[in-house]
Amino acid sequence: MSSNAVLHHHALRTVYIDHHGWLSAWLRRQLGCQDQAADLAHDTFLRLLARDRDLSAIREPRAYLHTIAKGLLVNHWKRRDIEQAYLQALAAQPDALAPSPETRALIIETLTEIDRLLASLPQNVRTAFLLSQLDGLTYSVIAVRLGVSERMVKKYMARAMFECLALMDTDV
Amino acid sequence: MTPDRRVLQEAADWFALFASERHSDADHRAWKVWLDEPAHASAWQKVERISGQMRQLQSTNATASSQTLRGRTNRRQALKTLAVVMGGGALTWQAGADRLWQHWQADAATGVGQVRQIALADGAALWLNSDSAVDLAGPDHIRFLRGEVLAQAGTHGHLHLDCVAARITLSRHGRCSLRETDSGALWLTVFAGDAMLRTFDDRVEHVAAGQTIRFDSNGISARNAADEARRAWATGILLANDRRLGDVLDDLARYRHGYLGYAPAIAEIRVVGAFPLADTDRVLDALAATLPVRIHRTLPWWVTVEAFSA
Image 1 (tube, rainbow over the protein chains, first blue to last red):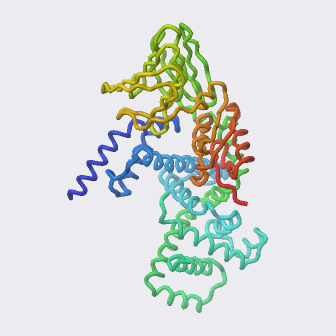
Image 2: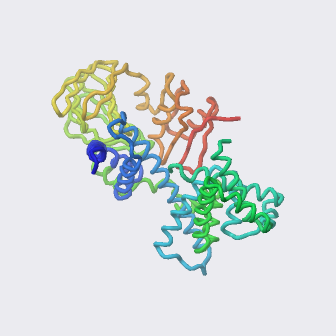
C-alpha cells in the first residue's frame, strides 16, 4: 500500500465510524427495512471509496454522504419499480419460461441501466428504439405503428443511441 | 457540438443506418473507412456495449423487457401498475416492520402527516411533529428519539430533554423545539425562557430565548436568531416567512411518504405563506400556482419540483 493509499484508507475509516450510524438510521427510515438499509449504507461508502478523491478534503461529509445515499435510494426505488413491471409483464404471458433468479437479476440490472439512459427521451424515440432493438420490428413497421415516416424512425434511432452514448459513462 | 459529441453523433448515425433494412455494401465500406480513426473506433465500442446489452435482453423473453421499458414513460400506465401491485394501498409499504417496532417501543409517536399534543404534569406539554417519537422517562424528563418536538416546561420546575448528543434543560415556563435533520445534526430553538445544553463530554452551552443552534455530538456548529414560524406546525400550519423554497420543501417532505425532491436551481427562490400541513399535495399545487416551478409526479410517492420552463 502506498502512503497515499494508507491515508485514504485511514480517512475512510474515520468517515465510516463517524457517519455510518446516522446514515443507516436515515436509510432505515426511508426504506422501512433494516437489511436493505444496511445494503444501501454499505453501497454509499463503496461509492465514496470509488470516487477516489481526497476524503479529508470533503468539508461536509454528512451532506456529501447524504447526496450519494439519496441518489442510491432513488435508484433503488426505480429498480424496484422496474422489477415489478418486469414480473408483471412475465406473468401476463402464461406460457413464458420463467428465467432463473440469476438471469432475472441480470435482466433487471440491464433494464435499469437502459431505462436510465433512455429516461429523458421523448416517448416516440424510446418506443422506436425498443421496438427495433427488442421486438425486432423493421423501420417500416415501426413507422406505421408510430404514424411517422421511415426516415423519421431512423432519426429517432440515431437520437436514442446518441443519448445512450452520451450518458453511458456518467454516474448513476 | 464538441468534437467528442460529434463523433458520438456519427457513431449513432451509423448505428441507425445498420439497424435499418436499407443499407448497402457501399455503406459498409464507408463505415470501415470511418472506423479506421481511433476516436471513431472507441465511439463504436460504446455502440457495441449498448447493442450487447440489448442482445442480452433479447435472449430471454424480449417481449417482457420491451413492455417493461416502454411502460416506463407512460405515467398513467405506471400508476395503474403500481395500484395493482400495491393492491390499492399504495403508500403502506413504507411503514416497514422495523418502523412499526419503533412505534410500539416509543411512549409517544406520530406517523407521517400526524401532529400530536401530549399534556404533561404541572402544565407542561409536548407536541410531536410528523414522524416523530419520544420516550416519556419521567414527569419532567423526555427522551427524544426522532423527528421534531415542541416542549413547554411547567410552571414549577425544569424540563429535561435527552437526545443522542446532549441533555437539554429547559427553564421554568420555557418553550423550545428540538428537531433532527436528515444529516443527523439537531436544531434547538428556544422561544421562551432559556435552555442549558450539556453535551455528553460535559461542555455546557447556554441558549437564550430567540436563539437557535445546530449541534451534534461534536458540539455546536451554528447559532442563529430563532424563526418564530418554526413552531407553527404545532397548529398544523407550515409558515414560511421569506424562507428558501428548498427549506420549505425539506420541511414538507417530512409530512409525506416517499420521496420529495427538487432541482437545485429552484432551492433559492424565496417563499412567503402559510400552508396547511394536512394536505401536502395541495400545498405543492399552491406553490406551483404562485412560483415559477412545476410539480412532476412520477409516481404518487415520488414527486419532484422543477423549474417551470414555458
